[in-house]
Length: 144
Image (cartoon, rainbow, N blue to C red; front, side, top):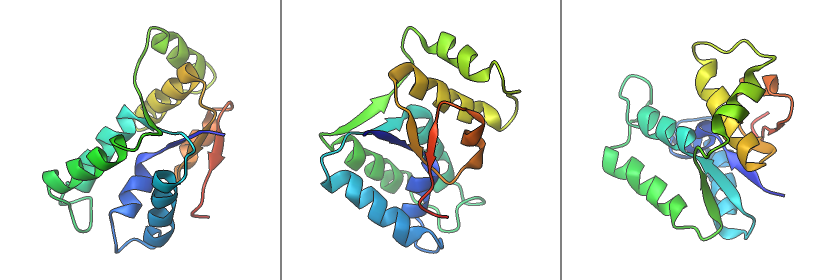
């Protein structure tokens, strides 16, 4: 069974001050060492880069080189897959948003949900309850 990682998992794994650091670090390490395919949506990776380097959002911001290096490491894992928009993206986006009012901060989550739908990924590891609004997704929250 394959799953996607949301940005918050990567952020927790990069923030030793987070109460979720240990769980997230173990989860990311498992993704790397086990042979199960895991997915990294581009919007989640870009969100990670934005937040992890932002001095007023992230408690101990990473340098761009550190943040980029973390992404480089994940992309080199042979069983990681990056999700990007394909020819059915807009159709998938319209599908995931037809029964949900999407505006403001929900737009990036809908973007990720549409990528997952387009690529047939049905599970996401996240601490973001907004993904519950997209009925086709199974949410795995290891931080509860």
